[in-house]
Image (cartoon, rainbow, N blue to C red):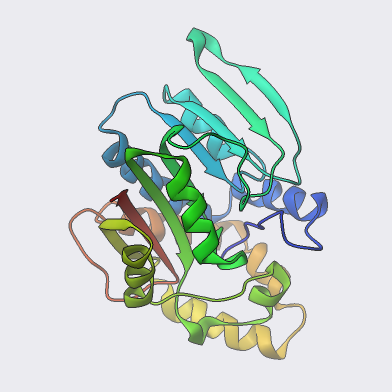
Length: 252
C-alpha cells in the first residue's frame, strides 16, 4: 500500500493530497512506516540537527514532524505550493513549489534528502542525479519505494506508479548512481499475504480500494499493532519480503 502521489506527474491534484491527509493520521500503514522513518532518521543524522530536504512533501506532515525534531527542513511539492513557517526555538520549516527533478537549490545544500514513495513516479535515474547534486559530500538519502511486481494493481496505475522494486534492483540502482547503501530492508512483512490477496481482489472489484483505505477501526488497530511491532525489530531483522522497501544510502 502506498498513498503518496508525486505532484510533478500530469493529473496529480489537491484532491489526492487531501485524501492522503485524511489517511495518514490514523491508517495502520502509515503508523508502522513512521516508526521506521524515525529510527532511520536518527541513524542518518546521528541525532544532530541537519539541513533536510523532503521530496514530494505532499501534506507536509513529515516535514513538520522533522522540524519538531530540531532539523531545518525544506519540503518540495508542486501541488501544495509555497509557504514558509518559522517554528519555536528558531527551527525553520519551509515549503517550496518545485519540480522534484529540477530542484531550485545550489549543489551541496543539504545534509539529508528524504524521498518517501517518490522514485516510482518519475525517471528514477534523473531523480537520483538531482538528489546527489544537492547533497553535501557526506550527505545521505532516506527513501522508500513499493516492492514486488506481483503486487502491481489498479492502485499503482491510479497513483501514477511507473514501477515497483526488488531489493536487488533497488541496491543496483543506488550503487550505479553514486550512492553507497547503508541499510536496505523490506517493510510490512507480516501483512504481505494480506496485501497480496487485496491486490488480487482489487483487480476484480472496483470498490476494493475504498475497503482497503477504510478498514473497520478494530481491524485498523490490530494491523497498526502488527506493523509497529514489526518496525520495532527493523534494526535487528532483515525481513525476507514486504510490501515496501526502505533504504538509507550515503553519497559517494
